[in-house]
Image 1 (tube, helix red, strand yellow):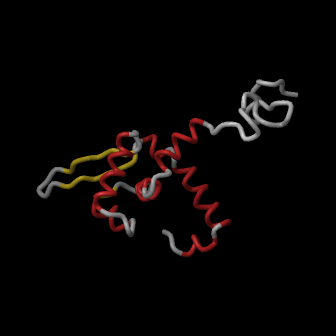
Image 2: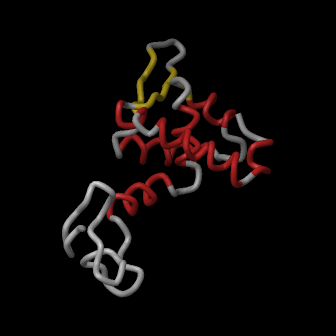
Image 3: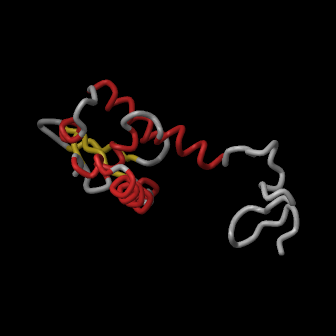
Length: 134
């Protein structure tokens, strides 16, 4: 049996009352890793940009067409944020015409299994979502 404050293979340590050891109150605190992930990918459009790029590199105009409703400004902002976070790489294709393409970095590609699990979850628990996606 795990002692208070001891971490087990099954997850965080448990307190005598069944909560997480070191937690404040009955709910405890949010995992810092999840906080960081949702701060980045929880922004509107960010997850969709990563999802589209998970299939292949794309030019800006292709991304805009693949994500209905996103404005050029918002796409540009999200691509910049994702690049700054190390998930997306911006590459300038030699011209003419000069074109910019985007692809996922190794860290961005590592999100693939998590995105696939989210797709499966949506298909199982949000049946209407299964009708309108790629």
